[in-house]
Amino acid sequence: MSTVFTKIIQGELPGRFIYRSEDVVAFLTIEPLTYGHTLVVPVAEVDRWTDLDPHVWARVNEVAHAIGNAMIDAFNVPRAGYIIAGFDVPHTHIHIFPTATMRDYNFANVIPMNETDQSRMDAAAAKLRTALGTDELGNPL
Image 1 (cartoon, rainbow, N blue to C red):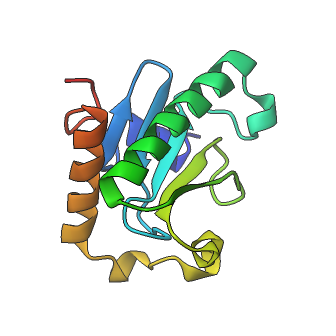
Image 2 (cartoon, one colour; image 1 turned 60 degrees about the horizontal axis):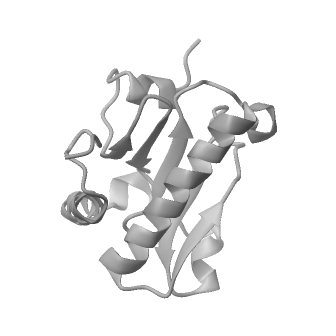
């Protein structure tokens, strides 16, 4: 059975993509810690990051690094947060989010899906795509 991330990657569920390649995708989470909170996900459906092929794991981190730098610039924040959690969806992923405080690292503080401002989500995705030079599907321009 496919994970929710695989369904997003395959277009069966909607996603706000900001990056896409053959082996890695990145899209906004539906319950962000801060607006711009992005999930960097390998296309390969592997539960634990420690089981992922090391070369793919390196690519995931390379993309996370680029997105983190884009966030710092696009949102004018001092840091891009980075968290590997992995208990919510059994598909390896890294949480990257613009931050100026340690408070943002607490998943108890997510903005619930029914309370997210969709226009702010769209604006955050657009800012990140502009900074990364990608289109609405996450492909390079």
